[in-house]
Length: 285
Image (cartoon, rainbow, N blue to C red; front, side, top):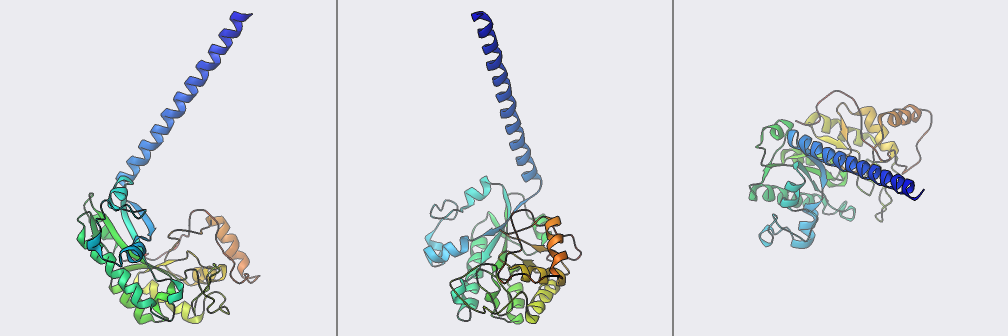
């Protein structure tokens, strides 16, 4: 009886060891496969707020830091390389309390620090198109810029166009505050334009101008009403740079029901998941 029990126990232990070996081998295979994919096609990170940290901690003085080994932020060049990042979209923005004040100046200063950063370090290359991303050497990280909040244009299409000329290739219509022309999903301490619901007629002009320029529309932080309005107007794909997306089925269900019932003010259209919106047109040039 005792011998039989020992045999059963040994068989169980052997089975567990075989199972554990298989799991570990599978994990290594998945990791290797992921690494292969990331070396074959550039991994693009859609949102990084390092420029904000450079302003907050170093007043945009790049001479005070070595970005290769910087340890006061989550990001440095070594970490980007270790993570096999092939292209980085740097977020340039001003906080909501700068709306109607100095948001444009602060945004321009953020653009300036990104441009200087990407010209200072050989590991970076500033790009403005998908073709540029494909053409840069494999040992370089492509740098792009995106504005994190439509209040940065100060309700001016001319300012939007100048941002494009400076290299900005996407803009989130809202941050954690409403603009005069678009509603955010977030509650903010900056209680401006509380009467806005969705996208105004000027907001529609912003969307159309971004499509004309080839600047991607970012719906992160957008309210349900804003997102539905944009999706009905936009002629090019939208993106969700860092948050708040639905599956295609969920999105179609929301869009289908939007005509029969008004969304609640401030409601978020998006849960967690991958953004999927098949459409025609160029994302950005």
